Amino acid sequence: MLKSTDPRSTTTRAAALRVQELTPADVARWDAFVETCPVATFFHRAGWQTVIEQAFGHSTHFLLAEGPNGIEGVLPLARVRSVLFGHSLVSLPFCVYGGIAARTEEAFVALDNRARELARQHKVDYLEYRHMAPYHPDRPTKHLYVTFRKEMANEVEENLEAIPRKQRRMVRKGIKAGLVSEIDQDIDRFFPIYAANVHRMGTPVFSRRYFRILRTVFGDDCRILTVTDAGTPVASVLNFYFRDQVLPYYGGGTPRAREVAGYDFMYWEVMRRACESGLRIFDYGRSKRDTGSFSFKKNWGFEPQPLYYEYDLVRARTMPDVNPLNPKYRYFIQAWQRLPLSVANRVGPWLSRSLG
Image (cartoon, rainbow, N blue to C red):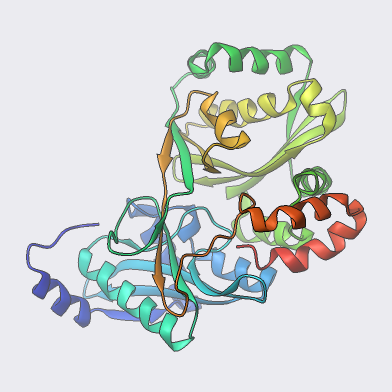
């Protein structure tokens, strides 16, 4: 965020900016801004409004701040009501990044002020920003998550050699096993693998409809890569593409995948294909500190970078602690794992809509 030398002039100009909600006529301008704003991410794209409203039924407030020269900042927000987890205004649920993307401090202030007004107007428990950098040191901040992002080399072989030796051995194991990667045009092979994977972890599954909507809304910027072993799918991952970046987002594997290094081969194939397409950043996404996925990503030679989930507490007195590491959810996770997969797949989408 840009810094102003005079807080009074920042406040005055922020008040002069026009903050409005996104309309269909603004979508192209919104996305053009996101495409060029340095701090914007894939999760700031206007399409998330359609995804969240249609797939989960949550109301949204996609705010843009505009001055004489056009859009200066955007803030995608969604309101999530949950009997279990409370009432929140979040930028952005179901997304690892979010918050305010602005070119000027005045736009940042104007959007923040409007978001806080909405939070109090709707009497939410808290307003949450999922920022990649600290902006509000005076607000409660959750330091549970980190992200793993790394610039790729220009050549495929350089990227392979950059993987630490032990992990590189696993990638080569998958290659020697004769695994093959393919790009799918639908979710038919991806979804059963993903659903069974999250069930084993004790997590409610998202609906098939959600993934179909993602593919429809984001098109070629949302692609599925599936790994097969002798023609049988063993692993699959849905990836997001933004500017020069690739972000593997939802993935899973069958028990066979562990035997043939299917996970390792899968992520290598995402990286290899991205490199060959001229992309520069491999974004492994968010992980909780000191978990299995955290260790897996470090083993690829990626260094954790802290994420800053900042809260403006409205009715709540403390930050929410909705995560599987919270001991109070342990028994729910164990019970969910014991459910038949068919039952979990029917009930899961109803529960997962509140787990943003």
